[in-house]
Length: 239
Image (tube, rainbow, N blue to C red):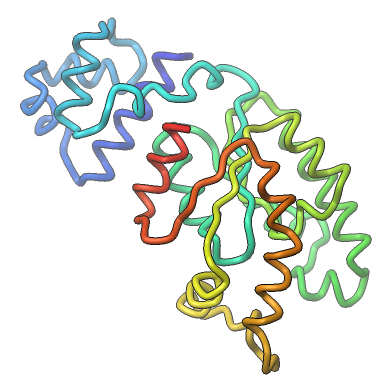
């Protein structure tokens, strides 16, 4: 399982750079057949060979091997933060780098409810959302599949769910300024944080001020200000 997870990670880094397997093999000074075996998790990979592959990719050995000890079994990383923190974008790239699955908790809630979140809150209320959120999180955390989770922005306010999440997963707060949160969701075409609200920024600052002590309970905090997606992914892996 460790070799398979490591091979998937090497392949993910290679593909992220748009490199062919042959090109990476040439840069690392190894045979194409050997690299293929490594990426399929069946190569007899020594530390020296792994170091050569990491050097060719421009990735540190520590970054490449981070989290591997948790991969076979119940490895879970849960990203938390307000909307616009980058949980979906960073989470999907982190999952690719680790060779893990990626899930968005709110998408699972919508599937379970059979309706969009807006309709769920309007027709069934926040209480029902919390019940479904707890149910889907419990189900995901109980699976043996190593998974990166992008959680809903308010999960930290549900005390029992937040406590359970911190016990079962490595929690990571993706931190950003209120201005960045609003700018990012607007760039994605999501104007819910500002639509019909004259003081949207002030309201968001109040929400972040209230939730920051809860977000800070996460095992790791990664400030995404001025960082690219890859830099944030690397910071999580190093943490």
